[in-house]
Image (cartoon, rainbow, N blue to C red; front, side):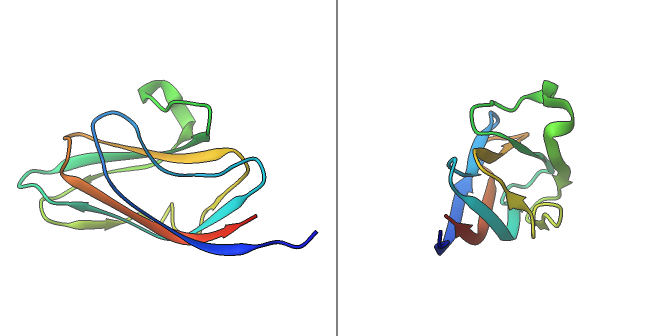
Length: 114
């Protein structure tokens, strides 16, 4: 069976509850090439990134499922190197939350294989 490749981008503003950034179906894999989080506020804001099954809702109790977290200083960009070059397998999702709503812009891009 031949594979099909296609580019994807995700541009999302994070909220204080889990926000889906990218997900896969049962027949595809995504390879994340670039992942940045930009703090547009005048205050430092913590961001938590999760890799979970698509049917799972991430929460503080998700334990080891969170991939990375960082407090981003005001008007700074975090290039999430733990997420970059990461493969998202079948039926998986990347979610993120921010300590303050509507001030963190998440930008992800990469390739989908189906």
